[in-house]
Length: 208
Image (cartoon, rainbow, N blue to C red):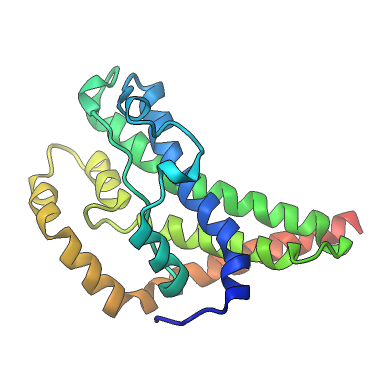
């Protein structure tokens, strides 16, 4: 699971990691802001400046272990206009949805410019696809504090007290998931990446 990448590989993956993590967290803050909560803005997190969002440990883990995280954007759901539960659902969906959109955009760009032989462009776009799919799938797992737990709470009727109780065990559950379950997560990740590569190939054929 833990591989020591070369400096060359690190340089090629950095754009995908920085863009994926930054826009994931920005999306949370932006949706919360649109719903009436200015907490992220007050904490300087309503920005696409990576420095505001990157968590050093999560950043290193994404480089060396293939998964990672950024600093969570602070959100106060009591500031939302309308239903708090549905508001948290939308805020939580925003991050993974943004990563999916970034992966799709990267696939289209890969297809459009693949034949131009721009140095390192193809491999960087492939990393953009892969890392954004990893971020989307990993964050959709319904284990606190991942977005998936809040999405599940928003979809299920009533208040899910068991998810709140599970929150205190979140770090332990994540460690167990990473050590024993990440190989199974790749079963979901690989087909999505393959579909997006097929999309890139289809776009490439259209522009040839």
